[in-house]
Amino acid sequence: MRSFILVLMFFCTVAVYAQAPDPSYVQNNYLKREVYITMRDGVRLFTSIYLPKDSTKKYPVMMQRTPYSVAPYGEGKLKTQVGPSAELMQDGFIFVYQDVRGRWMSEGEFIEMRPHQDTKSGKAFDESTDTYDTIEWLMKNLNYHNGKVGMWGISYPGFYASAGLMANHPALVASSPQAPMADLWRGDDSYHNGAFMLPHNFGFYPSFTNRTDGKPTQTPGKRFDFGTPDGYQFYLNLGPIKNSLKYTETLGKDPYWRANLEHPNYDEFWKSRNILNHHNGIRHAVMVVGGWYDAEDLYGTFKTYQSVEQKNPGIVNIFVVGPWVHGGWARGDGDILGNVNFGQKTGIYYRQNIERKFFNYYLKGIGDNNFNEATMYETGSNQWRTFTEWPPKAAKERNLYFGANGKLSFDAPAAAQSASQYTSDPAKPVPSSDYITSGMPREYMVDDQRHASRRPDVLTFQTDVLDKDITLAGNIWADLKVSTTGTDADFVVKVIDVYPDDAKDNPNTAKHIRMAGYQQMVRSEAMRGKFRKSFDTPVPFKPGKVEEVNFELQDVLHTFKKGHRIMVQVQSTFFPIIDRNPQKFLPNIHYADPSDFQSATHKVYHNKTNASHLKVRVLE
Image (tube, rainbow, N blue to C red; front, side, top):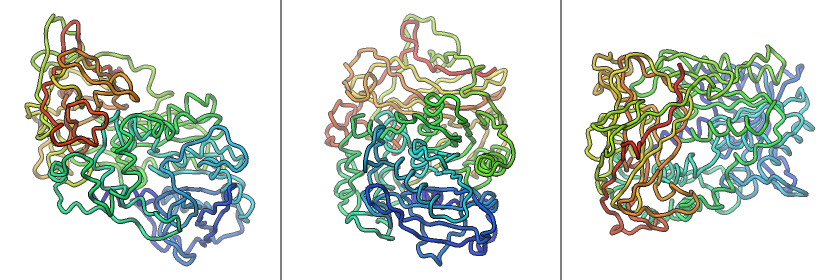
């Protein structure tokens, strides 16, 4: 993964802001304490506490638990910003940061997304009990708190906020899991429906897993050195993923990397880490936040909101999604991404008008509780919209059917026989972007897809020029009818907004790009075909047999403007963001031999009997 992703993850923890005050603000207004807080099993967790210097008032506590370090260490060394935003930092809170078990200066063993225990007794612990024990200590040992605690976190800290929802300490009154990891195999960082997210894991985890001897440390792990900026060629030269184990100083000794390779199916290793199964009995206000273009934890964002909503009727559970990358709402203006312009400073709007209001109301009683259930930024038309539920009930289900000659239409096909085919060669995979990168660029989710639509191993279907705006609101399901000459195959589906030929460039459009005819990716997802019937029990394809491959593309709120077209692309490689499928059924793709990789021809059927389509929700 490119180095900026590592920086991004760290910045999500320390919270970098677009309009930060003078760097001396924290130094001038806060005192810092460093303490070890003892958990119920005796393990001590390192905790940094930022206390307002004005001790004549009582303040609520804002807490973040993180695996990314509470640095800087030393009571005389302070962060330059604290809290979720610059605005909240200046509103008056006690800010608490904690290294979770086995990370950095905390004792204990780190477990990747430690499984939650619904039933606990005695000294049994999980992330919810560590949350409870920390809050209990804070309430008993801080002198001028007001008895209320809020939690927040982005990405991995978002998972800890999500797991902490079940702590149910009476002082915990507001939580905001933001881009929270939820299920690493189904759709978050590690796999998407069994398709391995290669650069996202390859470049990140060696530097993340920094504890090998169980002793507290302030030393980060060693980053992986690609030796080239060209990730496409690097991963192609690497060959089968098992060859990564030759990097003995990084990937070869990383336990989580090995776990990824050893658990390609949705087995108990992954199921036990699915926090979505445990969002029961939550008794305080929740605000889930995410971005439409979150390349890491889009799945976790939507599924966390849905899980809390379904399992906890009656609580305040609000949802905010903007046109942001992973953590983009916590910093930056939020008005551009890559070549696309969103027309408003959405990040600033969120921080000043939504996040600030939420925490000030529930932790201080300031303002009112007139919160919208769902506040979503509608891309394409570039406007904020609010809804009383998500997805909106007014959005009607319709099918977008594939057709002959690359047609895409809301009308079902009538032909008795009709199909399109392409040959996919793992030795020449479709690039996931048309530029050189060694990682997973955050812009790829809005990239121009013309480089893909011009390849013979990509099927392209598109509507006629739209005579009116069409708004899609909610999730999208791909319902493919396919056959293959191989025994396994990946299927990648992309939903694309095709701009008219007279579209004007944006101020942020790259010099080598033109928005005229731009094919903006709106949503994409992959499905490893062997899991089409069962995630935990893969089955091979029978060559030539027509089969259903159905999978969910995550939610959108996007308007395809009059004069644009809706396009769908289908392909079987998306490299190197997704690893290459040998197209030969194997118990474990990661341990394939070079000879296992083979070309295969795939057919996508679009006739009356086998009508491949997307199930969408259209908001009139």
